[in-house]
Image (cartoon, rainbow, N blue to C red):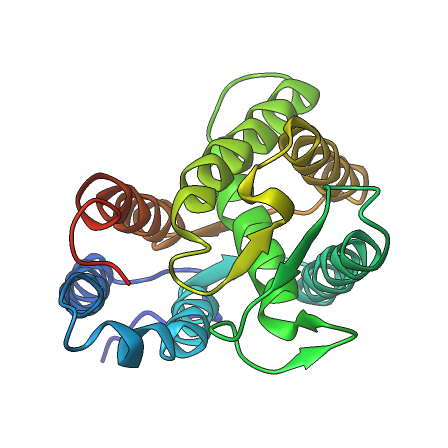
Length: 228
């Protein structure tokens, strides 16, 4: 009698991963349709925290690797680090520039949504997985992962105010926002390399691409049509 692959064994059945990718793609397509229609736009903006939480659950389900406590420590460290960097940024305007958060990202602490910490953790996790397969020095992989996060943010910034995520003073995104994003992202990547985090995830690359395309489509089709 054979046993089915489990998360603890470090093996995820390929058909299970494919089905999950399809479900995630459909989930984001429904969200995209809802945001592109004026009648449902405001309702779907309030579902953004749920989308982030469900995406995080998918990553947890398909996570495989060793040293789970070390990985949990790293993810929690990125969550807290990313959150408090944003708190300092909002309160002082020194790190990223002058900005404030809207309502669509859910409950706030110190004027910063808790989902922001989760977003930092998820992006760091996914880009670590994507670059983990590159046959390059670890420092180079860390730089590439940080640049991927900046490109992601570059697209997201274009629709963030429309989605009531956050707003920049004067409606201008300062260059230091992207520079600081790169430096903070790089710091997280280097910390992961320093404590020798090793994990894989069959959904990480697909989810990162789906999320990126989700915001890119909103930028291309949404901001010039029905968004808001």
